Amino acid sequence: MAQKIAVVNQKGGVSKSTVVLCLGTGLANRGKKVLLVDLDAQGSLSISLGCDYPEKLPVTMAEIFQMMEHTPDSTDAVRGILSHSETLHYIAANRKMVFVEQKLSQTEGGEQFLKCFLSSVDAAYDYILLDCPPALGMVTVNALVAADWILIPTQLEYLAAKGLEQLLQTVVRIRRRANPELQILGILPTMVNPRTRDSRKVLRLLQDTYGNSIGILPCQIPYSVRVKELSSSTKSIYELDRNGKVAAAYEQLVDIVLKSTKAATEAGTGGCI
Image 1 (cartoon, helix red, strand yellow):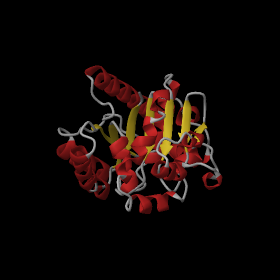
Image 2 (cartoon, rainbow, N blue to C red; image 1 turned 60 degrees about the horizontal axis):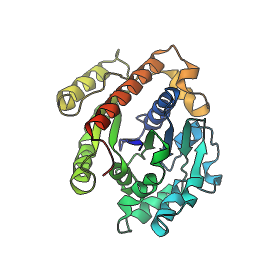
Image 3 (tube, rainbow, N blue to C red; image 1 turned 60 degrees about the vertical axis):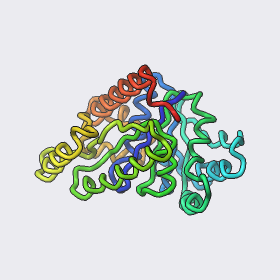
Image 4 (cartoon, rainbow, N blue to C red; image 1 turned 120 degrees about the vertical axis):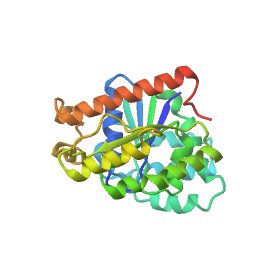
């Protein structure tokens, strides 16, 4: 059964899609079978994986959500799984996800649709990574209900750090109502420039506020122009700059994820409810 990790932050521009792409690729490079699920209407992850026109695909996450509403046991949904490499698969998203958000909010039991779908495919994978939209709407709620873990990337900016309060309140509600086994891998600082005073100040704020309760991951992702190239290239950061600091930070993140999920599995936690 796959370990499901939701990469979540309601603020946009904090590198959620990049984190999903680089972490997923890193896990696949270690021999793990990985499925990446794009839940964002912008389709940034899909485009970065080489899907230039996700709106032209016959089956995307929008169609899968619709299938789960009408025929939860439908096998047609698996047609949406695309192959990026032998060990790295993905499901694309497009602008139709905007309508999915509206529909889910009006549907009884709509928060369970993603969990229902993933339960039908997770036996084929070691890890499933969920790229959540920059909002705390019903699509993100679906991801939190379905996930075993959440990973919280954030820029070292004051407003981004303050926004974590609302996200963590949502996590508490999800734990109480639908997914008591949901665990937090930690807060992942992204696009870090340690030379700036603001970055150092916000990092101290995060450490003081969440260091003991949640944990700030040690693998801070440095700011790099090379990372920006990922959106226009089908190559991974390991190919673009294998010996660079960003690739090294993501390798460290892969190590943390492998260690944390292995420990939880051996302890009998971190599974689906």
